Amino acid sequence: MKLSKYTYVIQKEILDNMECAQLFLLSFVSNNMKKFIKSSQMKRFESIRSIEYRCHHISNPPFVNITFEDSFESIMDFLNIIKKRNKKKKRRNDIFQLNVSGKMIEFQMCKYNHVPKVCDYDRDKESVTESIHNYFLDIFGSSTNCIWRVNKIEEDFITFVPKLNNVSFCVDLRLDEEFTEMAILETFFFSFPILKSVRLEAALTTELFNPESKFYQAESICVNQFQHTFPNVLRHFQGRQAIVNCTQWGASEDLIEFVNRWKSGEAFQKLEYLYFKSWDGEILENQILNEIEAKYIDSTKQPPTHSVPKIYDWHRVHAEPNTDPIISHTYVVRATDNHVASILIQERTISFGVWNKTEEEFLRLMD
Image 1 (cartoon, rainbow, N blue to C red):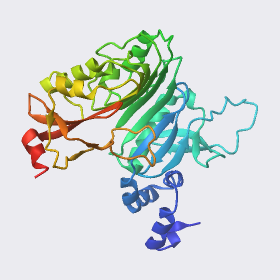
Image 2 (cartoon, helix red, strand yellow):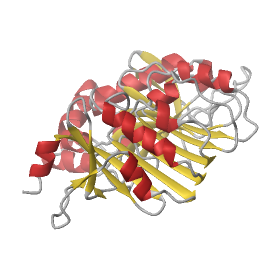
Image 3 (cartoon, rainbow, N blue to C red):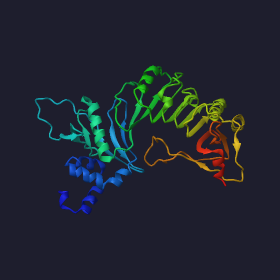
Image 4 (cartoon, rainbow, N blue to C red):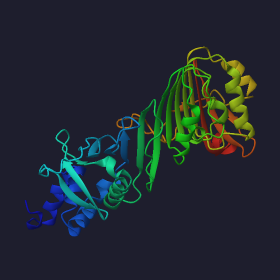
């Protein structure tokens, strides 16, 4: 089909109904075609939430999805690597070459999801990844949010960490009770820039991160642990959002210390949101509120609702874009700037939401 024989309206209609993987391939037809795709699909590309490189296991090359608000599209695979061809055999006729950001790269079409997949990725993964990533930014926009997500880090922590523009890194950890490789894990974290998000599952291990570990510097963390022993998130976290789920817990002192350190301005200066849940163990509401010297909104008034955009959601598509709402008559005030945090304690949960408002501004929300 020759697009140029149709009017602009029909050409655009055709492109509007093509998936991103098809547009990616079509863009190599000519420079004019690439320019037309970029201009005609500008609104669509602006609605992209992220380009996400996903590795199922730390040793696997990624596959690439483009995520929108309520859907996603596969655009490329690196998973199926073609073994080194026997020189005596003829070249496979389903392989094709494309000049991607000045580098010739071999592809073939994936029969499973009909997207291009890179051949022999392990042979030159650094320059191949960089070339493809730069082409994505050229097509979809240089400000597009890009994420490199690694799932299932269980044994070998040494992996390829690409150095790419405009990319955030998300890491999923599962550590059993016999875990003793903390030094290797810290080295692994050190190879990354600041992490966007870390999801951690830990059993009864007594190994602890260094207080200066990049784990605590991640923008957001989601921790699921058997006992509240690893790691001590409520003491060293330096990021913005934290979710902590603990099976067995019974130390209100940790929560009291956390809130009081925030109130004094000593720690957690970037914090926006904390959610803590104990599956087995009561959170002593009165004790905690008394110890932190909480303030109270008049019971006849409707408190404002605290909610902020999630930094990263491990479920992504169809997930709520914002943190769970906090509606509470109880709050605390930070001494250094008079800013407010709402605090909601229920049977086995505590929610803590920091407002970008002084106490005076916060109370005016209810006038």
